[in-house]
Every structure is written in structure tokens, then in C-alpha cells.
Image (cartoon, rainbow over all chains, first blue to last red):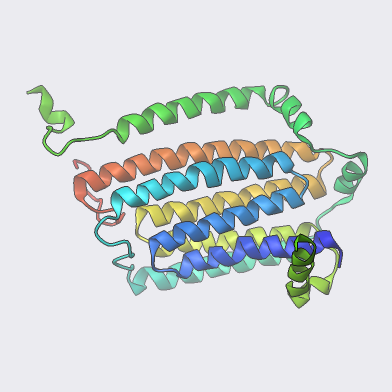
Amino acid sequence: MTFSDGAFWVFAATAVLPAAGILLSRSIVRMAFLLLVSLAGFAGLYLQLGAGFLGFTQVLVYIGGILILFLFGLMLTARFDVHVRRRVGAGVIVPGVIAGLSLLGVLVFLALESPWSTEAGAAAAAAGAGDTFQIGLKVLGPYVLPFEAVTVLLLVAMVGATYIGRAQMPGTPAEGERKE
Amino acid sequence: MSTGFLPLLLQAAPAAASAGQVGLTHYLVVSAIVFGLGLLVVITRRNAIALLMGLELLLNSVGLNFVAFAKFATRDAVDGQVITIFLIVIAAAEASLALAITLNIFNNLNTVEVDEARSLKG
């Protein structure tokens, strides 16, 4: 086993085991921190795949941004009881778990049994590809339209989130009642 | 110290590691397992924030699939990475909006359980 293969197994365990923990954990704060570990595992897998820029973007945006957002959401909403208070009934759990597990089985089966062609990838790896410079060329070249669309989307999301989540003082009337 | 730690981790890696060269299939299996777990989180939780965490797991596993396929099965490995970058951006937008909505639901209904938020008029 080479060093790179061993690193893959470490990162894969780091990504998968906390995901199982998220499913089983009862404390939502613990779920958030397990999500941190799992996202870090994914960042490691990206690095392992030779996607350095993506790996660090994952750390910056997901762990540094989205997860902090989750923690803020937790702190602002779970002040009475941080535990998940009520679980859904067996009428949802049983079919849900059956559906989820069968989807998992089908996906794993497909991944293992399909004859994926990897010749093109081997050729590209021999040529040496996939660094930040080329990502920049792609984003401002063939992908410039989606890039611009995503920037507008981010602006819209930022304005929308600020408007929806703005502070509403306990005494002030709600939006509809203010006009009367 | 740093020279001894990583080899130790490698020794501790599961025995299945000797099964052979890590390839596309390994990444696909990791991604499939995380996708299944994320879906189960979305199904079994009713707390809106827990639900969003499951959603992030789903998005991450899809992103890993894009990068793995791009590296192993296409001529140009950068395309998949660019798509995954877009995916991360959209996930960030989605998370911020969804958390803002969750906060609003909490302010109005005093709960973050998605089953409780049934009325449209706050």
C-alpha cells in the first residue's frame, strides 16, 4: 500500500464516520461539530484527487462560512433545549430508513459493478492537469456565463437573507400591521 | 514527532486497504455512503437545522462524485472541479437563505421543527 492510498483511507474514514455520527447523534450541537469533521474529510479527499484549490475552498467556504452560519443558527434558535426534542414516528422512520438504505445499496452496487472507463483520465493524468491556473482560465473562459449568473445569485441570496432574517424587536408590529 | 505520526495512522488503516490501488470506485463508494447517510438524516430529522446539515452532506457527496469522475474518467480534470466550485457557492447561498427562513419561523412560531410550521400566515 502506497502512502497516497493510505491517506485516502484516512480521509475516507474522516468523511464517512462523522456522517454516520450525524445520523445517530441526539444532540444537535454535536451534529454540527461532527459535520465539521466530515467536511474536513471531504477537503482531504479533494486534495487527494489533485484538486488543491477546491480542497482549500472547501475549508474556507464550508468550514469557515457555512458551518459558522449553522452554529449561529443553532445559538439563535435552540435556547430552550439543544437536544432534538421529538423524533418522527415509526410511520415515517421505517419506510424512510428502508428507502434510504436501499438507495445506498443501489448506489454502492452501481459504483462497484459498473465498468467505468478510465482511459481518458489516465491520459489526462499523464499530461498533467488540474491546478488553480487552469481553473481560473476555465471560469473566465467557457464557464464565464454560469460564473456571472452565480455572482448575481450570491448577491440576491445575500440581500434576501438580510431582509428575511432582519431583527424583529418583540415590541414592534409585524410587517402587515404597520400600515394601518 | 511528525515523522512518526502519519505512518502510525497508515498502519491503523483498515485491512481492506490492502485490497488494491485506490481508484474511481473507491471514491464513488465513499460518496454513495455519505449520500445515503445524508438522505437518512433528511428523512429522520424534523429539526430544520439538522435537516440542512443532511442537505450539506448530500451536496458534498455529489461534489466528490464530480471531482472523482473528472479526474478518472474525463480528458480534462478541471471541468469537474469548476462545477464543484459552483456547487459550493450555491450551497452557501442556500444555507444562508434557509437559515434566515428558519430564524423567521422560530421568531414567529417559537419552534424549528418543520412539522410545526404548517400555517402560511405566521
